[in-house]
Length: 315
Image 1 (cartoon, rainbow, N blue to C red):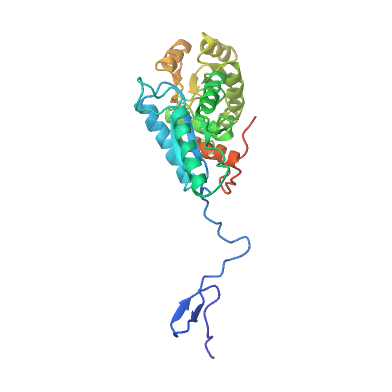
Image 2 (image 1 turned 90 degrees about the horizontal axis):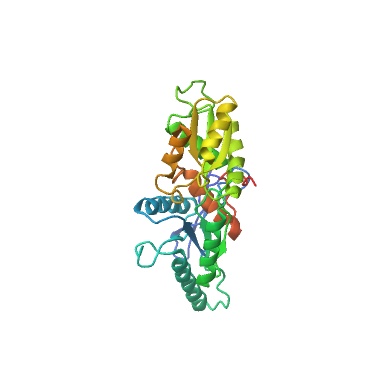
């Protein structure tokens, strides 16, 4: 039987140039549903993503913000991710650039690039993503004011929640503290697992209502009652604890529906002591937080993010 001649199907084609030397031709792209997706990257010249970090700037909040930005860059290679502090800048915090200053610098760079390319409209200087799990009207007003003062034309996205991924993150933080089962699929129990959870937030009634939506998702995951309450409302955590105990819950846990920088020192510990319960850590730089940051940026810019499975935010 004679052997086939020529290249195998799908292999690169090799032709000869005028000198007789072989020339490697590009591989034919695979078609159909098994075709590999094109690698995702930020469009060239896309505005920067500026993470608006609330709270008094500290080395811990900077480390957290840098980690969240790193996650965002890994989700969207080529992304220009920067950090601006709502309370940064000035003589008090010179090493923490203010949100307004970061936006003004980004706008100047964007205009310079547009001028060099002969583009009359440089477009928005940045897309600002608040590092907030839920709404905080006072903080959001300050962020909008910083955008206006910077004359950057920056656009502001929604906060990160409510979202199912934040319910997942809360579950992980509770399990890390020994206050919940790590996996619903495994039929083992944790001796210290809570049978009632207080979802703690800051930002007023709107923030409590938004936390309550994520609380319902968390309750479905853990099969225990979850109630939201404001850390910044005097006595709210203790009243919610009593409400849970009155309904039959005896072993309570406090779960901060907060990223971390917006949480004042000592506030969480004092609330947990007042309610007589243990507390999990804040969400921090959990992977889902970084993915939601880049998802909000991409949604504002109209960049599709296939394959992430983030789902739509719950409003």
